[in-house]
Length: 571
Ligand SMILES: Cc1cc2nc3c(=O)[nH]c(=O)nc-3n(C[C@H](O)[C@H](O)[C@H](O)COP(=O)(O)OP(=O)(O)OC[C@H]3O[C@@H](n4cnc5c(N)ncnc54)[C@H](O)[C@@H]3O)c2cc1C
Image: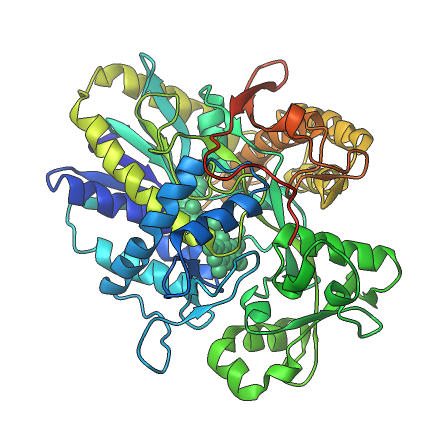
């Protein structure tokens, strides 16, 4: 087996992974950093972000205001020390990114242009038309190429963390191109593997978002935190789930029902005068309620409502939302200059993830996590749109710096023991590839996982369906051990990687459903029909979920409060 050694191993080549890599080599120019990614880095999900990245930029704005908006958006479950650090670093990170080449859109006077986003008091979302993720990732990727000591391993699927003597020592990784396994050893490992939207059937997330990093950490005894909180974005295209960015509403778009009413203005959905600029959890619920009240429109993919941009005019749409026009024309045959776009809520983002502290450190020495895979507790029970890209930069950088400091105080350890673990993992993967005798089909298990997640853990939840989902997932996990692969080839065996991904998703889905079923209140994106209010007395804490052979085990962690005292969340 090929054995490779670096100081730091970063799993993931999206915004968080690349930012961590750059921070690591800047903190220690002698450090060697491996950046391992299951796809070519520019294909990471970050590339598809459209709307923008939040940071205070205008004279009429303040860090205090960005901080409070984020705390309130989180339904008071975000950690306030983390939020404070985030809002302070955010403008520095976005400015730094400009110096690395990110072409932020401009006002006529040359200052950075900002747009309105849901739940934000003022315009603080920086953008580069509506192709923000593309430009951010490109700038990061290009900048990372300046450093010879960032060594890339593209199309390598990490299947296991190597853990020895109570610390992480590297990863075992499948070369998707050749079907061979490698041991990539390091004194510290940073997970930057993104979220797991593909656990749900109808999502804006790319196919690669299968919660791998969460499963890797979970299997090694690290808790997954606040997994019950998943975000539905109000405006996805029916059928495909392709995202129509919140920037459409930031630029003045309206949501309308079948009667042509702006229902967020006409009825009380808790968003007050913010109307279409309310937070995502509330607007998604409003759309579901409109549809349930018979005011939805019927289409080939079920009920939907309208996103109307026609009053913005062709010039504004072409200038600020060109990709929205392109996507709408191609995928639903609608030109938003002339007609409203059909939309419905769609699974978009996971607030929960690998439990870390403010440094990105997990409870497993040497293991760090940043970006969507992590739960540093910035987003609490509901993320505000445009905070996530900035989170990848702020906490990716911090994790990179901290991992370098940790690696300095560590040694190379017992390499033979680590390689032995990687060899054992290689045998497991080899057995999975040769598993042509089973009777279960990947597609069938995935379909059943999707169905049960939507019925139990969707926009609205209740005890009986959540409990049923917990039971169904436990059974699906058992059936997964009898899965049959048709393809035993080595080169680009995507059936094998699909099986590995499904295994990861089932494990993380189970932690999500178990966490959801235990929280008997409504908070942020976790909304129950049978427990309609927030209950700070009994549930103002983070949920920790631990892997256990029998069934997931739950625990609690305190929320770090501060200046902002919990109050009713109303806009
Ligand atoms: C359509 C869409 C639009 C969005 N728009 C916005 C927006 O406008 N503003 C905003 O703030 N947020 C937005 N978000 C959210 C935001 O883009 C993501 O949360 C963020 O980009 C995640 O970045 P990341 O670096 O954590 O992970 P990703 O960009 O998802 O990258 C994950 C990386 O991990 C690698 N990886 C995963 N598993 C493995 C494995 N087993 N082995 C090896 N490598 C692995 C992948 O190859 C990839 O390189 C949007 C999300 C979507 C889906």
